[in-house]
Length: 354
Image 1 (cartoon, rainbow, N blue to C red):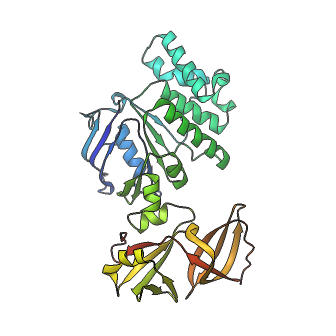
Image 2 (cartoon, helix red, strand yellow):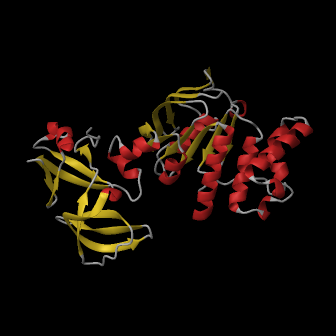
Image 3 (cartoon, one colour):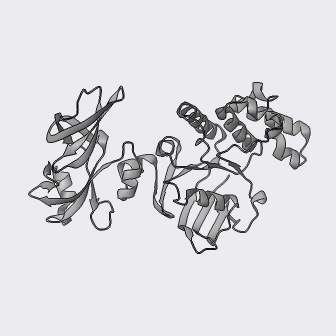
């Protein structure tokens, strides 16, 4: 059992710069939580506070109901996997994986069994006598994970573990981490700036910006029902299209030189905004061809199963559409398109209008 409670955590450095504001959440036993956001948003700082590598300025950290806010890192029963692997180059893979248990002076027979079991899980059995320099980046990252597994910690912490890998290895290692989580049924906190990793790995996502938690929810909740324009723009690739200053009147949204018809349900959602301006959000994948909106195409990216069409709509409002299949548009073409699922946001607060 490993339940983690982060209760109103703050991090303020000696120069009075605050990196994390009122971080508050409960991590359930066996849950994989992904902290995601742009560089400098406070996600790694939060992870380091959980690990005990950064002091907590305010708030409390509880592990299985016990307050560990002031507990030293070595006594927190957590294992951290770093971005740069942090392996000992002069040691074999076996020795790297066994190192923490050797320091604890555990029975060599127990250490041997644990290392072999971890190596079997990670497909490293044939690599145990090699040195880290003889392994690929993906294999080295698996060794770093194996070193954590042999400790059998209550909580696994991952700090951008895939950042140093190329695209193909990132995908493969991401799948290995997901399988590892399902096999171990362990509690994990995972930090990344890559929203694709967040969407594919997480039981729940914590989206952060400038030290503040913007939204906590399942991947589908953050994608389908973002709480504000930041989450809507950060989650999803390509990012959501936003149109400021769209006025609601006569059953239509009007602004930026174009009009968008609304369904009865959408009109009901916006009933308190009649005669007022809002922000309209449209995901590129919710745009389809053969509609009344005239898009002036600037460039076309064919991706095989999908095509990204870039252009302008109305009074030079930029738009990106993600169409299914292979579309052969050229710069200067005019394409008719229509909007599907729409997202509405308050102009002043940028919060979602439900």
